[in-house]
Image 1 (cartoon, helix red, strand yellow):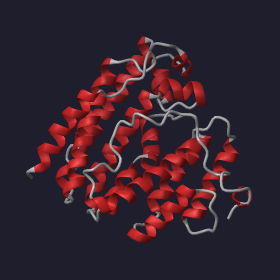
Image 2: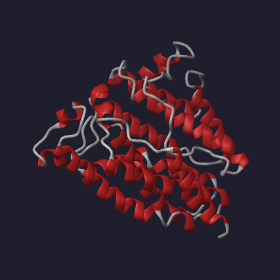
Image 3: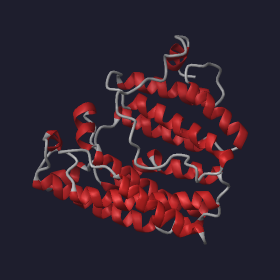
Image 4: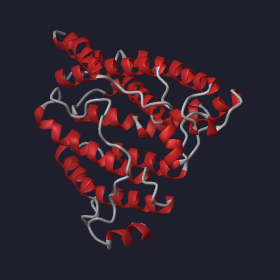
Length: 289
């Protein structure tokens, strides 16, 4: 146990998890929906709460980087069985892992990503961003696949889908992330190639150069989504197969909206019609296979 984490755990039950002030409503994609087998939903929700609460720590502008790291380290220690109730989400996740016998690896991977968020504010290029997504996004899909006992051959398509979703979310929040946290996921090399800097994200509308950077990232995301289209066919679980098909459909629709919308001018988000279309084309499309 690190000294900083030990100090935090002696301060009371509210000393680790903390709200970030960042909006938490209006999620783009279903989390443990009714498509997931009933007995597994509680474990999906436990993983979501664990990741979300850790994300809140990393995104809290009132905390110093060192304080964020100490809090995340404390969550990791409780996850691994250390006593204490400072992080209810970590304690619940630990119990979930005991009951399901799923490895804690994916939980530790997302904690690694949030430690990066606490200290790393810029990404050099697309490869640098994808290396981050390996820890921030891929573990989410891998956790779901392992929870359902799916083959790890599905990891590649799942990783592509989760990374695509992560990039789409970064693009949605690019202005807010810069203004609130001075954090920029758009590759610095891409911005420099257009002759602009991160300051372009402070504007209330995208300049032509920034629009080209966003479109270039969407082009790369297109390739990830194409790989992800093969994921449902690789999943044996009926409910998870349908849910993955719905999520692929939602990713396609959000990508289209980001092509047409300006994330600096207003948050680009899915509409009710997008969700209905994704359910019809995704869930029902795979229901008879």
